[in-house]
Image 1: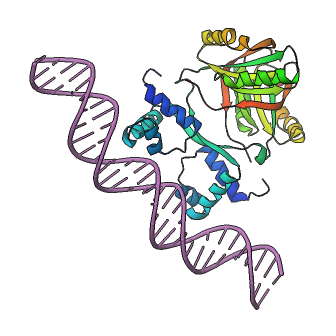
Image 2 (image 1 turned 60 degrees about the horizontal axis):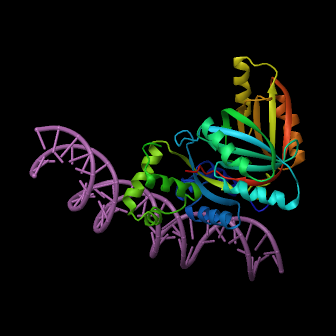
Image 3 (image 1 turned 30 degrees about the vertical axis):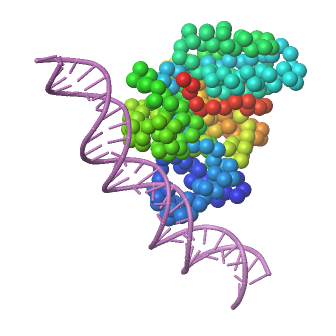
Length: 153
Length: 153
DNA sequence: TTTATTTCAGAATTAATTTCTGTACAAAGG
DNA sequence: CCTTTGTACAGAAATTAATTCTGAAATAAA
């Protein structure tokens, strides 16, 4: 952050919004030629500011329209118990995100499934089989108002 | 989903994980030449299966290390009240995600800030100024266990 | 002022994407 | 059974983009 000037930030902003822009086009926006923009991007990648480039897909068209946040409380809180839980969580592809949280519950999971039947199946046959889960609370999403992958600066 | 064969799904899977792969390289993985892979990708884009291509950035390096989920209850639930709330939410860049949820609260926000001081500032000077917010509950993230942008299939 | 150092422009090269042409194969209709 | 139509593909050609190289301009340090 300290090593980044305004040009770097503008490059990051653009690539976050749309990474298909050509270097030439991006250079034009910044009133530069391709070389410095190319070198800056490579530096931002090398130094870890840019983690990866990905395609974002349409959930609805790919039959993953249902979002559920599932709060989980563990039975025991021993060191290796948490570690095992984490290992199991990471292996389940329906779980898109998992956070260790402060408050009434230990973890919050964001789960993506096709519909309520799939969610039931997920909870019954996958989540419940994980060791050491005390109780869970499902919060169903009725509407996605905003969903960005962009950091602001 | 119905229009997609196994080759399409493998293409989507790859581009979700890393969109910088060249068409030639991807074609080799699928035992095809560049042409059919190119045409399939263009079709997946055209038909809306692929929404966009983006760069994912490193939160920590860009000084957005703190994640907070903020549950919000509205005072009134009239039609236009919700609409105004949504408009205000979308305008705040700290709010990365916003869901209309079932349960005790009306909305859940995912907020990204630098630290606790920034969060306080955000709540005091930005969130609290939004009309019609009844009460809020902040759930602080202690650790991010998993965070994927990939749909599984 | 002199000397490094950094940042950049422009040309040259290399590699990618995109377009084009024609072949092979499968399904549909006579 | 043969013909027609459509789809999916390979391979070559054309176009455009990424990458490398050289040197000039600007900035900071000595």
